[in-house]
Image 1 (cartoon, rainbow, N blue to C red):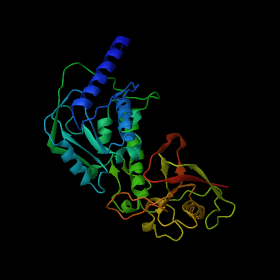
Image 2 (spheres, one colour):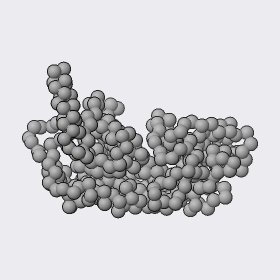
Image 3 (cartoon, rainbow, N blue to C red):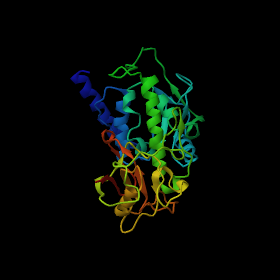
Length: 341
């Protein structure tokens, strides 16, 4: 892209912003400048800005598209609200061009970004992001609406961008990376459900990878670092890592002392408030085999206006934590802690 063309495009977009914001009441247009080399990176950049600006819903569409039907906000919002729990999943329109078996346009609630910290997995670059968003939530939380249609104005211009069928190491995107992403992301979805007391009994995710490894009944427990921690907190302490939830962590589903297994789904329990949430949750983690980290809500928060559930004292035990994956935002104040000797 030449410097002249770059400046011309930016000037045109700024003029469009000013015109729309001035002459179309209720409509706000904002240009987001992204440095990206792929469709996925550009989408993630723009949608991160939407999320940070407080948008509740967003609709990812192509630039060469025509909206055939109206009232799509009404229909898509209603479809998302009908999921269990509400707004957890993805919906989209019917498109009669391209791959009609998947969602080539998608509409989600901001919950999507809270769970994944991106709109599409960055490893996918260009192709297969539509496959991912169609399948990651499983069939029960994915819906294509017949009442909504978008037309893809296909022009025979050849391939618009690189396919990136393999990553730098030579791993196949559709046959290796995409299945691994489904497996990881089913755990992220189920982890989000477990973090919210009112949703812990909701159906767990079943996508092309099957179920998350930590979503079933008891499995073999990973041992405490010295194998001797169960039933004793002596010599152990806890250290705060940060005030955001980890993007990738797991619980080995070891029995939690004093809690029936069905009352501690995913390693999360309620009511850990005395003498304070962090100390109480740390004590439980120290007494539980396989627990090395924990997340605890330290302030009261209603997940929704219709909910009576308060999150303060909700404690989620973790066996593993991927530091390289980073952290994600959560509703309500809390802390992520590590158990130390």
